[in-house]
Every structure is written in C-alpha cells, then in structure tokens.
Image (cartoon, rainbow, N blue to C red):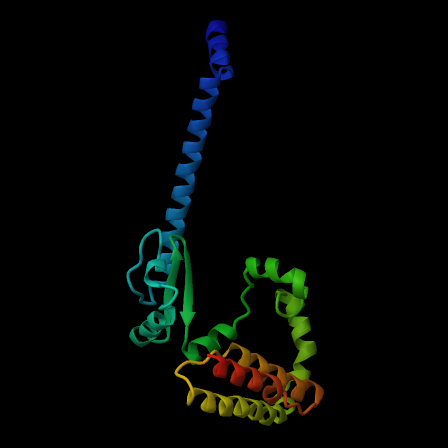
Length: 224
C-alpha cells in the first residue's frame, strides 16, 4: 500500500504527471462549461419560442447576417417580416428581443422587473444610483417623490417648445436634402435636444440650431 502511494506521489510530482492532471482538469471544466452553455441556450430557445425569427447559427447567432454597411436595411426587412418583436441572437447563449410595436413596448416599460446588473455596473460610476438604476422599494420611494414633478399637466406646456425645436430642425433638413442625397443627422439631433432642454428647463429661447449647427452644415456641404 505504501509503495502504491509513493508511486502516485512521484507521478504527481513529476512534470509530465502535473501536465496530465492539468489537462484532465481543463477538459472537465471545458465539458462543464459546454454543458452549461447548451442548457442555457435550450432555456432561451424555449423562452423566445413565441417570437419568430430568421434561422440563426448555433454559435454565431445572427452576427453573420448583419454587415456594418447594411445593418439598417437588414433590420428593416425583419420589421416587415416579423411584426411587433423579433429575437436577435448575438451568439450561442445571448439573445436580445427587438421590440418595435408601441403596445408591446408599453407592456414592457410598465413592468418593474429588476434591471440587468451589467448596466448598473457600467452606469453607476457616472450617474450614481438614482431612479434609473435603483430597484425594489427604494426605486418606488424615489418614483413617488418625482411623480408630481412629471405630472401631465406640468409637461403639457413643454410640448409646444419641443415641437418648435423639431420644426426648426426639419426646415434645415428640407433645404439640405435639396442640395445633396445624404445627410448626417447626429449633430442636428444633438442641437435640437440642447435647444429643447434650454427652452423647457431654463425658459431660454435660443437660436443655437441656426447659429452653430446650420452654419457648420452649410459649410460642410459647400466644401463637399
């Protein structure tokens, strides 16, 4: 008995023995991880089976169907073929439900499910734990405190200010589109958002969309 124990000790103490043990442990962990991913994928398939979607690869999901320069066009085809909502597989065991129906979205936004921990972990250092990241009873307390400030009667006067800001942006787009076939809208939307905030939050009637964004856009089109 002592001889066999000594032999086993010598085997484990040698470099080839340690390498074999490490390889065996790595193989076991790999099999366990593969089984875990398989079971999770089966659970996700069952969870989203009520929402039809195009066939997906068991590992790469729908990534191969979305090219960088054709992602919007591909998604528009999905919206036409699969109304209301459609699962999009990012990879083997990760799926995102794309919802583009107002009634579906109303149901989702009306729920009080816990927020995903990934978003909390990424956003907390920037914005802290406020209404956006809180859950449970603490979220309910903050929500009750803020509800009077966002009452419909208080927000109604802001609709006109928002419409004015959007109207200025659309007028700029009409003139710019007549000059060219494409338009970069990011800067325009950012300026429109800033203009709306200044009107609604600070009661300041600004012309920032015409003073900065409009001139830059005109210069960019003339240079191109």
